[in-house]
Length: 124
Image 1 (cartoon, rainbow, N blue to C red):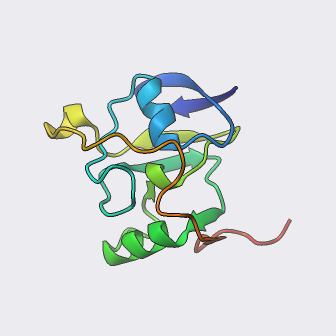
Image 2: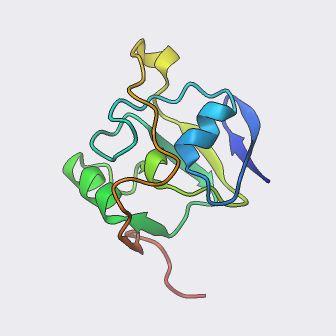
């Protein structure tokens, strides 16, 4: 198990590689997800203070580009938990008054096609 720091909620425990959206929910964060975790909306978005992964799925890139959110937010449904993450949920059911959609699957959907996110260092 790893620890993910969540602004406004404290520390939550997650499995390495677990979908961030599911770890947040299991940890008591009422993260909003309207499309069922398939990168068709941006309601599950988070911002990173630390530990932002350099990997990004093509589905996440396409949706963030469409909504002009590249460099401002990430989609928690498209991120695998890793040690050292510190995030802020940008929309919750409580803050919006909206109800989440169907529960996201255990594995990232659609089938992930990975690339390096814009702005990520490829050195190291």
